[in-house]
Image (cartoon, rainbow, N blue to C red):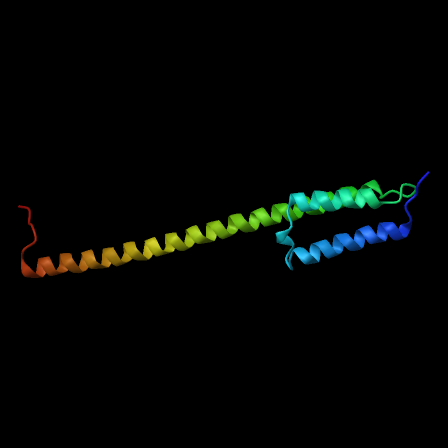
Length: 118
């Protein structure tokens, strides 16, 4: 019967931590595949006589799911912000055109070249 010592479990956690820091400073650089890789490595090196608590595994999966949702929300809000910026530019352009049309109409009325109805 082969057992893995607690030191082996700590070594797996240390290698996972170094993997996270070597991939980049922000957590958004890690994807689902990275998470699965870390999870399988953690399961591979855990002590069979003292496995990880199920509630801890569920909590880790919920945290990753929440992080993924927040990342998608951030991407969506950035896209909406860009569209609102474009809409603001369009509104300024329409306002500018409206001002120019008002000036043109006033100039035509002053010159007497505007159409009149009887």
